[in-house]
Amino acid sequence: MKNYNRDLTTAKCSPGNNAADDSAIKIIAEKGDVIAYDDVDFTGAKRLLLEAAVSPKSARTVELFVDDVSVEKEIGIIDIGDRVKANDFDFSEYYANLPCISGVHKLILRFTGHTELEADFFRLSAYMGSETEAGRESRMKWWKDAKYGMFIHFGAYSYLGGRYCGKVADWYSEWIMDALKIPKEDYAKNAVAHFNPKDFDAKKIVAAAKSAGQKYIVITSRHHEGLSIYDTKIREFRDFCLMNKSCCPEYSGGDILKGLSEECRKAGIHFGVYITIMDWHDPSQEGWGESRIAAGHDKSEYVSRLKGQVRELIDHYGVEVLFFDGEWVDWWTEEDGRALYRFIRTLSPDCIVNNRVGKRNPSDGDYGTPEQEIPAEGLGYPWESCVTMNDSWGYKMGDENWKSPQWIISNILDIASKGGNLLLNVGPDGNGTVESVPIDNILAAGKWLKRFGKAVYGTEKSCFQSAVDGDLRITSKPTERKIYIALLEADPREKGRITLPPIDREILAVRELASGRDVGFEATEKGTVIDIQKTERQDFATVYEMTVDRY
Ligand code: GLC
Image (cartoon, rainbow, N blue to C red; front, side):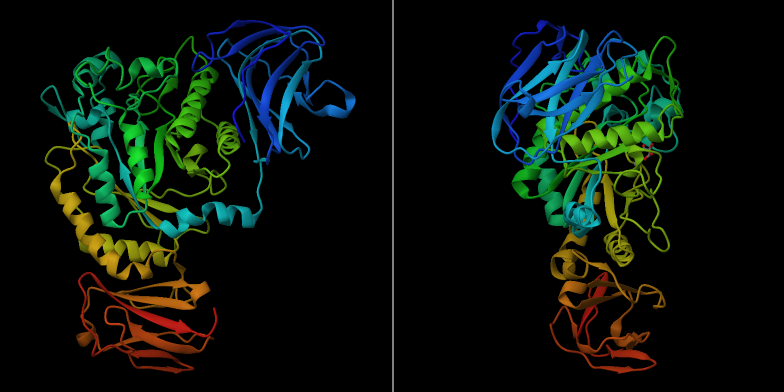
């Protein structure tokens, strides 16, 4: 589907300036007036989304036609209903279902009565608001198979590194504004104004992620401090972004997010962004940890801008995953989450969204986000544990408590054996450089993954999920009839054998993955005993591949 032309024909209009990015068209139409858009490609379109601020005086419906205004060419109705704007910035989504239309046509919107609206944009989409189990499986497939990604926390807090005006903040460095209750203006002056990530090297970071065996990257586009670290065009946010000289005067480099997304694309790494709902800087909010909507403000105006950012991230940065956060504020509701989710999938039907788009319920978004923990039994729906490489998400001076390569491999295997993903964080410093120890550690783990990644990527949990030894982690690839048994840390020669509970499949072979050599096993009704005495211990984990007759 191609984008449309903003070609306004008969309706009276003037350029508006209220849309999130100032591009709305102000329309004052009377009954029978039309707006026509040439060359609209309807291929695959099932729904139309109109993003508009509609005044209370408006008629309730807008009729849709293709090519010309005639009964035969009518294709649907936009129901404006009672959802009229609460303020000038209140852009809402209006959806219309479409019949199956193929090819390129003129799209005509006809007003059924006096209408005053600001039309921000419209979009045709294949997303109908729901999907089949099979559709969901195929959309989520790359992400589930990926198993392992890199999280990057980067913002003005990276410049502070956990210290501010002689004070050291406890806990996560990106929470320093809250921890020390730093007023917005002071934070802008003492942190943001000095943030100059001149050494941020997207190519190097992507190359490290790739060698580390990470299949996707998720970077903070705007964290709770409110600074957008990319060239946002959205009202208010653009006044507080890295590319804006009046807030980051020292920075003269390019758009970090653009650079990273391009490098990811070149390297075949999937690209996602983190985006906060709660924002300690935004004029719409006050307070820190639990922001409140500020007096005289309305959340719908902020939400319009949030959607504006989501749209620019999807359209211009090719974002495939949206990781929301800061959703716990009580002014953000489950219903807000559902509306935002529908908006995202309409713009980008294949996009994958975390559960913090809503309130972290199993039914919110597409996947669960256990933080700094691995659920003992996994979760009954797609999930990803996000974990810090040391003890802070953002760069923190002196925090050297790095996860080791052994930790990384053991935990990837543990997570994979429970059907989840690992999103492992790095926090570049204020210049944009990632310290060497975390990079060395992920690279060392990457060497193991290069040799034994078969036991991780594209796997699911196995039929041995429970009832296995403490030092075994077991994954499976049902389509290939393979089961991967990883022995953590212990020396196979000392351990001598692996004992597994019985399974109702015939075991055809077991081989040592490192050498490719078959190893002996004995399967009885009581279980399977694999003889590993002659196999060699590998760093971090030793893997055996079992082939079964069916899965
Ligand atoms: C939290 C924190 C935050 C961090 C995030 C990662 O909710 O507020 O600082 O970005 O989780 O999951």
